[in-house]
Amino acid sequence: MRIAVYPGSFDPATNGHLDIIKRSAKLVDKLIVGVLHNSSKNPLFSIEERVELLKSLTKDLDNVEVDSFSGLLVDFLKEKNAEIIVRGFRAVSDFEYELQIAQTNYSLDNNIETICLITRVEYSFLSASIVKEIAMYGGDISKMVPNETIKYINEKFKRK
Image (cartoon, rainbow, N blue to C red; front, side, top):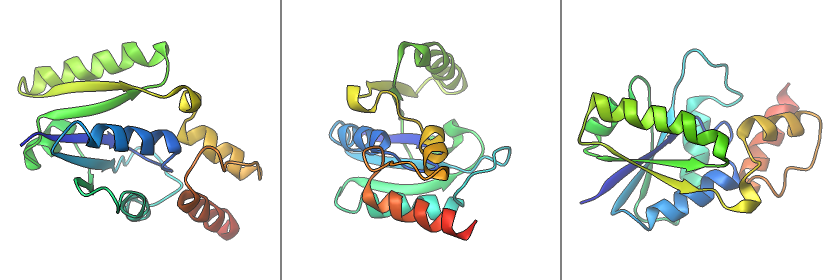
């Protein structure tokens, strides 16, 4: 069984993330969306909120599960019996960073392979940071994130 992990902070999940999830799920038997709990970052959404949102967004994808993790990605892969990491490239500028990360993960566990999917053109400018900034100032993010994400964002900014 080919098990892959698509890791990220997903703060919030964008249409670009969802596109990579759907496309990579077709390539493997099981895809685990690994939501990173990074204690050095101050996310807009809690780890529980991000996991809940991604579960809602992927509920129709039978071979996708969502889980959270902290620590080394290679340890999370071992825990999940996965050997493939999925990453998305938005631009050429992502290549150097992703190459370094892939080589580092391989050096930690040479059974791990990284596959990179090229982001579709319509999502190439997207990042969670851009979405949050536009939303914070009341801009239209409807073409950037799924409707479910908009609900989460609107709720979050109403509380602030």
